[in-house]
Length: 387
Image (spheres, rainbow, N blue to C red):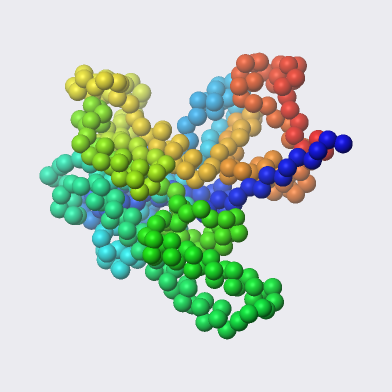
């Protein structure tokens, strides 16, 4: 008999389970959060020059761009088209002392706790007409302020959690039943996380947690467990020229403190103007004008598609396609989903009674030209329990 395949145990991901996840836009006041939200969602939320213009969080869905999806739509010419979506939340600006309640901080921090990932937006442009809450432009300082406020909120939560459970756990003593043992194990995780956040002053997402610890941690919805994508708001000129004195410093700070996180420079003013234009011709003419004006080394383009894709990937989301004359659709799933779970996104009964899925790759379909041709080439695959 052939040797049995080794079982691969998937480590659970930090954060809420499921695929209906959200990215929140976070930063100091007046750094361009609402303008960015307006551009990325083609919305018309207020964007004014004073702190706390945005009080209640605004929410919108943004289609995730994918050339493969566009090809499938053109190929099938369906009656209905449903792309994958990224949900984006515009959250009011935080200020220094937010964790202690400054500037309506407690309410805003609760809004951040409710999202699953963070677009951390910082300002690297000078504009005398747009006041900066700290008095001058220093994006590295601003990044440090926001990170510290988020960590302090988690520290406050963990300290209260530990104290609320300490006496109960101490009363259990040695031994005990299975329920007592579980309480003790949970308390050990609390102490470990408390030390990591409060004493070591590190983000939870950067720790090396076991699968069991992750399951416990996920019940607490900690802010520093959320993935982060850094967005650096530049002036029109700096973005077009791909030059800004702060970019190397910001990148160095991220690499030193949060290695592996993504940094994306963009220009809020460019994106705002593009979002207000109705035709592709207008947008193309505007971008050509920027190239003629600033003579950049490469063409000037919107970076919003890259930002949307980066946010979607930061949430550990992916999708699969279904297509035909009635509908072309991208179904969002969490990375690590197996075929039954993926089928369950279409209908819950499909997961419960899953037997088999018939699949083909996009590249094979595009190369062969039809589903029948993929089958004839032997590249149409059956995946299921009985195989």
